[in-house]
Image (tube, rainbow, N blue to C red; front, side, top):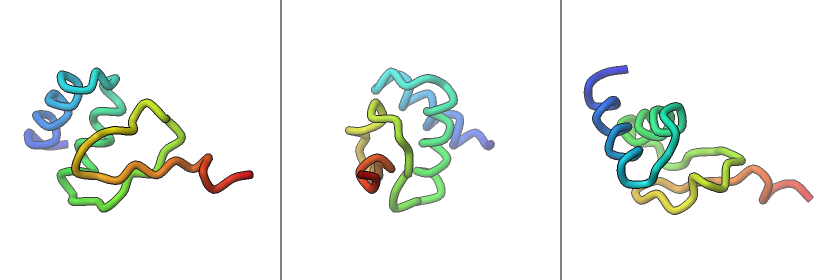
Length: 60
């Protein structure tokens, strides 16, 4: 983790109220310019600049 990820995570926590681990994962994905973030956590939806892909949408 570098300073950019830490600052991005802090901004995510402040704006969206994410827990620290979630904010760090998302900040890393954003800093690495990932196109999508795969999760089952519906609370992470709504973040800007990255597509949140919910695994449950692929399971019947």
